[in-house]
Length: 246
Image (cartoon, rainbow, N blue to C red; front, side):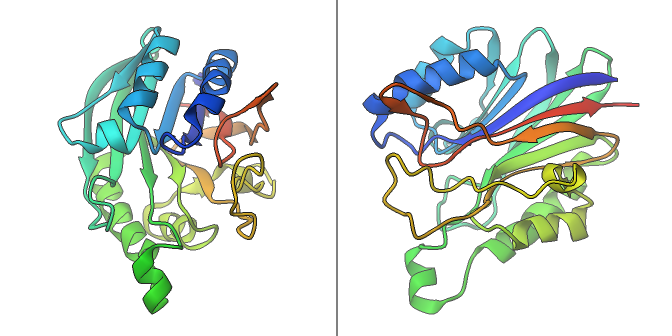
């Protein structure tokens, strides 16, 4: 059995980046997670993360979304990379999708990791019609994940932009369990972080980590990390510790 740590964080593209940059660097270096999954990355933020995470490999495929939507960093001394890719989810945000990597751990057992950023509730079409995108996106993602994962242990995470239905669909259709539920905890609010966000009317637990297979969550939390004069994002991160493998 191998114990690993994983953190997911929506980086809020480059909004207020100069106010947040030092906090983001301090956070990733302080927590030193074995795997980082980010949403809303941009080339400017990736450049900073690449410098701050010198002991990590950034997974990058040919799709533009690896450089302008989602990114995965893994510790070089803990994992070798077997395969990676992106699944299109027919989203209005054309570069988003399911971004995934299949890793080999030091115990020679595979681990599948995926991150995604589903469509926001305030999307213009949804505001006009009242019909959301996230149900269909989650159904498509669940179908693809079942095909890709096979019998491997798996972790999925990201900004689901919905506290209920994507997690329910991933549980019912793909056998995933939310880490907070598995530990008997209520999922904490992860949006908004009030220091810079103006969306105080949205108070939600929408940043998720879910697992399937022989993975056992040991700890799950949402660190309220700040430094003097700096904050991470308009989201709070989710950090987990997992026992993986028999």
